[in-house]
Length: 165
Image 1 (cartoon, helix red, strand yellow):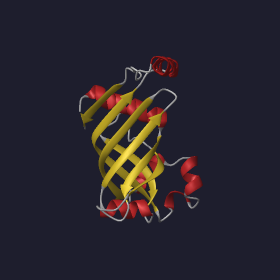
Image 2 (cartoon, rainbow, N blue to C red):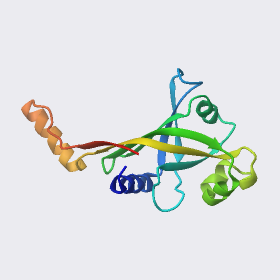
Image 3 (cartoon, helix red, strand yellow):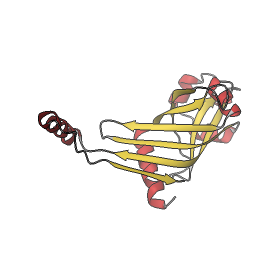
Image 4 (cartoon, one colour):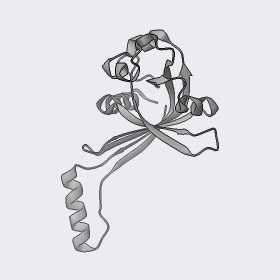
């Protein structure tokens, strides 16, 4: 992936931060299950890895130990910007990373603090990303109104691209 694409992923993720993490419940053939997660960065630039604090005894950790395939979905409907990241996830015990990412939000979920024995790191090594960026709400609304009046489908200029990480 080129530096420009990595920078764009970093900018989108830093503005949105909370994604939906999709895993296969109970293994490779299990149904998809999603839950919201708060994203951390190790440094200022996106290096292909996204980080999350997690309960290493949780269902999501079990899902990922059975099948490490993960999809992260970021959405900012207000700006009409969307990003999905597909990759391989690892559940790690790493006290240095836990301390690095620790904040008040983590304290709420892990009241025992950074030494909570169930607290770990979820790392997603990105393999592929897809971007969608649509028009502003005003342009979209005008396109829809025109389509309704004319009976034609809306002609909306949407940028979509896929990159390998």
